[in-house]
Image (cartoon, rainbow, N blue to C red; front, side, top):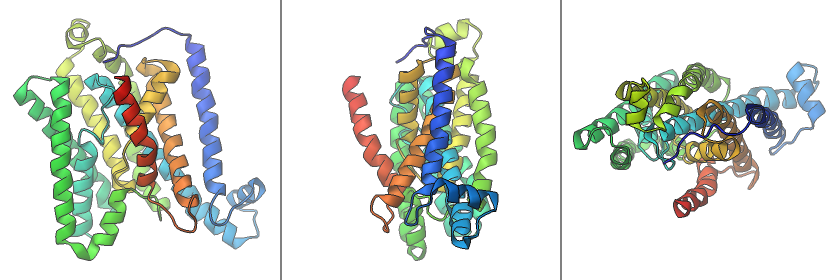
Length: 333
């Protein structure tokens, strides 16, 4: 459990957020520059401004790496804000969209759309959102049946639902093995081939979800006081719990629909944010978004470059980074 900590100067927290904004710009620049063919700052600037005479640099920088990096940035922000919202509203620091089954629900519906409607990539984000919303509703419904709104039971129900939906996804892939390479590669988590089309699919959901999530920060702060105290302060507990979980589903579902089921970003970024600015969600949600973007852009850059020309799944990199982090959290708790 955690409670809000409003100690510390707001100007210091804003300074940390501004510093992270600068880091976001730097990691994006590194991501565009690094790869099988690397480019210096001058070449990147000329390619982006249209002044380059190198058609290969123009194509790689503008049409391949830039949309891929921006897609990774948005997906990382979405997963991180979704994780921060869920951790706050469920008052459990070990919660993330991956752990309680939201990602699994989005993954099942995304694979279903891929199998039944191949080529209709524009249908994947709304399908994934519906899958994420269905999983969140199922988890919350189960917790209400067992015991009204108990946060521990929500998490236990989430683990069970995640396993069930993951098994259904595997079964669907097995029955449609003619598309196994596409669906399996996507399920592991990948940003390979994510061009401007995928970025344009993702950014409307990201914009709406992140703005809604940050605007709900004061309500999430009230949840940290407990349901009874929050309710006595005017918080409509069940209503806002459903609303916040729905917003988290929009964010996680849209990210999963484009980059696959990438775990641990929604767990690590909120924890790092709270270490840096405390538990006040007015600051930690914003910082979580920035740190989530940084984590996924760096993970994707490592996935592309560490064993080049072979490219790893970005989900493998985040799992290698996230699993020790999760174990450390368990020992600390």
